[in-house]
Length: 167
Image (cartoon, rainbow, N blue to C red; front, side, top):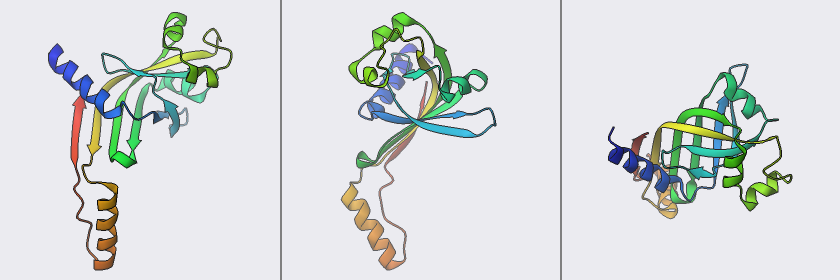
């Protein structure tokens, strides 16, 4: 993949998730079960990697040691935008990076600041993303669903755009 094409793919991912603050971060635990938890994406870097703060005291931190393959899902129902990012999670314990990415919202969750030894980062090295982006509005969708219920048919809703982003 050329650098230009990769940059385009990263830009497309960033544009899809930039306004979606929270994501569901899914790992596989030691019993082999999928576990999801809400997380805040701190940054999508120039390579398309996603960055999250966590604590060394969390199950997420432990889950990614033996099973680093993860999924991060973003949803903005009002805009009909849904994005699923697959990748490999890496544990980052680099105080300079932790401090460089620090912001007031993170301070609320980690009151001892960026020097707290339990505060760490998880970088998801994204491999691909899939997205669904519907152009129809909420009112149109609700109308079509109500009509379908009354007529015994399926809703005539524009499915919108669906695509894959290779990272």
